[in-house]
Image (spheres, rainbow, N blue to C red):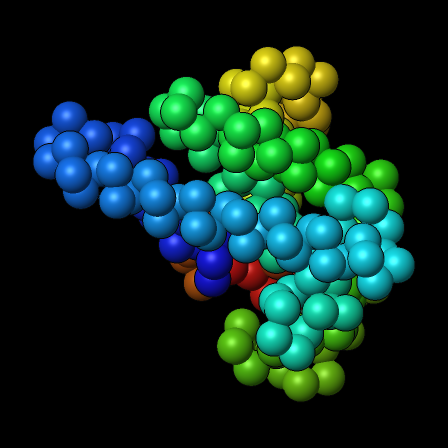
Amino acid sequence: AQSGMVMALEEIVELKSDKVPSDLLKRIYHQITVGCDYLVMLRAEAEKRGHPKGAMSHDLHGHEDDIVPSDAVKAVVALARAVKLLPDTYSEKKAAYKETALLTMNWLTNKATPMGDYGFSRFQRGMPEDTPIPKNEWQTRYLVMYCQACIDLFKLGELKYRDMAVTTVEEIMQRQISQENNESGFYGHFYEFPSLNFSEKSWAH
C-alpha cells in the first residue's frame, strides 16, 4: 500500500505538476519522501534481521520477517520514480532511494523466488479450491511490475535493464490468450501462470 500511494503522488508530479499550486506541490514532494523513507527503512530492517541484502520487510509493525517479492518490486518502481521526479533539493534522499532500488532489484533478479501457494487466494481469482498453484512460476501481474521496474531504472541510466525489460515483455506476451484460444469469446487477457494454460479450463486475469 505504501508503494502504491507513493506512485499515485508521483503520477500527479509527472503528469499534472504544471496545474498544481506550488505550495501543494511542495507538500506532495514531502509526502513522497515520507513514503520512500519508509521503504528504505523496510530494506534496512530486513537486512538487520539477517535476510539477504536488498530484501524488504512487509512492514515494521508485526510483519518484519515477512519477505514478499511483490512488495519489493512495487517499492523499486516507487523509489526509482522518486529519484527521477524529485527536485535536486532532495539530492541526499534521492541517492538513498536509488541505492535501495538497485539493491532490491538485484535481490529480485538473483535471489527472490516465487511464493507459490503461500498467501494465494483462489477464491479471489475465481479458481476452484483444489487448483494446484505452481511453486516455481511468477504471476503475470508480478512480471508486469518487474518490467516497469526495469524501465524506470533504465530511465535513470541503468542501461542493463533495457534488455531485461524486453525479455520480461516477451515472457508476458507468451501468456496472452489468443483469439483462437478464446474463453467464451474473450481473448487478449493473460494466464495467471503459464502452467495453468489448460485446454479445457484456464484461470486468467
